Image (cartoon, rainbow, N blue to C red; front, side, top):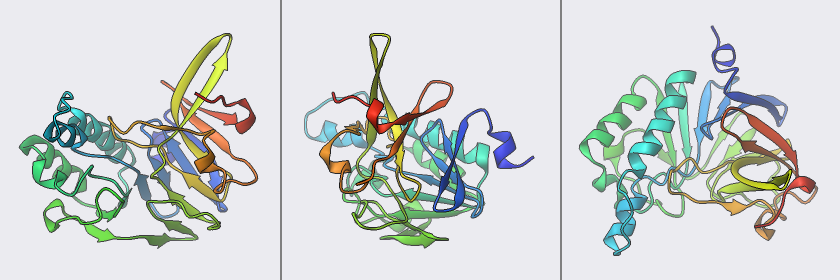
Length: 233
C-alpha cells in the first residue's frame, strides 16, 4: 500500500510546481516523487525557554509536538524528513530536551535521512540532535528554506506560521493553514506553542501578489478556502 493510499483520509492533494503534494492534518507535507516529508516551525522547548524568563507555561509542548511529528513520520514512513527551521525555540533548546523526548526524537529519525534547515531561532544546531544541518536546499524543482523570499517562484518555507480565519453562519473559526499559489507554499507551524499570523496580514502580500488559496486544517479534513473568504482578526 502506498503512502497516498494509506493516508487518504488525513491528506489533501495539491499541485506544487507541477508535482503532487499531500497536505496532512498534522501540518506536515509529503512529496511522493521524492519520498520526503516536510515539517516547519516545531519550536521544541518553547515552554522551557519562556520559563527561563519567568513566564511559566505547562512544560509539555515538546512532547505534544513530537507526538504529532511521530504520527506523520510513522504513517508516511518517508525516506527523508526535512524540518524547515525554528525546530528549536532557541539555541539552548537541544540541551534542555528531556530524556523521554530525546528518545522519541531518536526513534523517529531511525532508518531515514533527517535534515534540519536552520531558522532565525536556531541558527546553530549541535551534532547531538542527529541528522544533517543546512541553511537551505533544493529538492527537485523546489527550494526549501525557513524564511520565504519574495520573488522566488518555487519554494516551500515556514517562518510566518499562517492561520486562516473564516466566518460561517455567524460563527468564526481560526485554524492553521497552508498558503499556496501553486508555485510557492508557506507551511503552518507544527509546534504546539508556535502561535500563528493571520493570512490576511500584509506580510504575505509580497509572497503572493496574485493571491493564494488557504488550506485550513480542520479536525477531520483540510478545507481549501479562497483568499477572498478569509477574515482579519
